[in-house]
Amino acid sequence: MSSGAILITPYFSFPSISNSNKFPRPKFHSSSSINYTIRCSTSSPELPVTTTERFRYDTPLTGGAFDFEKATTSLTRKALACPKKVTIVRHGLSSWNEEGRVQGSSNLSVLSEKGAMQAERCKTALSDLHFDQCFSSPIARAKQCLLQTTAEIIWQGKEEPLVFLDSLKEAHLYFLEGMKNEDAKRIYPKEYTTWREDPSNFCVDGVYPLQKLWGRAYEAWEEILLTPGENFLVVTHKSILRALICTALGLGPERFRSVDINNGGLCVFKFNKQGEAMLHSLNMTAHMYTDHIYRY
Image (cartoon, rainbow, N blue to C red; front, side):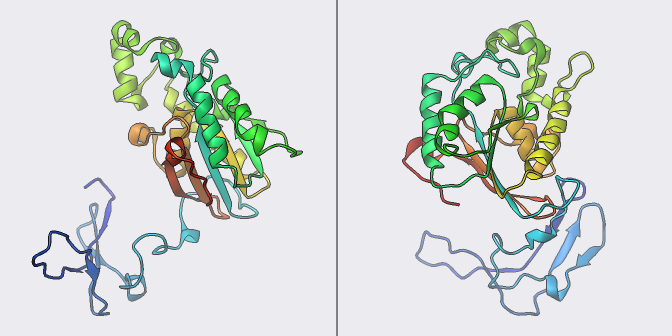
């Protein structure tokens, strides 16, 4: 167990199983005499859970067991006027995605024919949702994706302009950008391997790209969340999208590759008035394979 981890250990009751190959779900005892303890890896004593903190047998373990308004990690420096919802879209497949090239912050990669089709699916999937404002990376593949999908349909007739944020640009990968992955691995084996396997320690001339990316993610969140409105759309790239997810969840650059987002994938966050995040949906892709329309 990692340092500082907390484990809650309730007592489960498993009904007897006979002549069945299906295992029933475990049930909590409803008796108030059940004892719960919290074991902390950094502390030897067991911390008792007070009566009011105990799980009730009829309380779900997710989606209601905890009070979201008492979360602890704020992304803004001041209270918000109202709770917010942010939908983040990764751009459609790009020309360099198809060619297997390292993209980074280069503006030479553009939306491919397949990527445009993915963008159209995103547009349709989000057509029943209202967004107060749309933010995008100014890099061509995200901007082009945006203009072919949400801007033409969701933004049609709206007075609010599309907002392009430099903080939503992709990570700058220096000399690796534009290289095919196999060439980068052959010519710069140490640097390429570090970027792929230990990205938080990838360093070029004393600069750590992920540290800069994390800083920009915080900047983007603050600007987005402090914008008037309740429901926002963001179109951007995978690396900065990963940083947005991790910073919202309080994770550092070392967790960069803990999440992955498909081209055209959707992520949804909810924020309380303190600017604290709750992940609602991660990498939704049903619309890539069906005619699914989202209503959340």
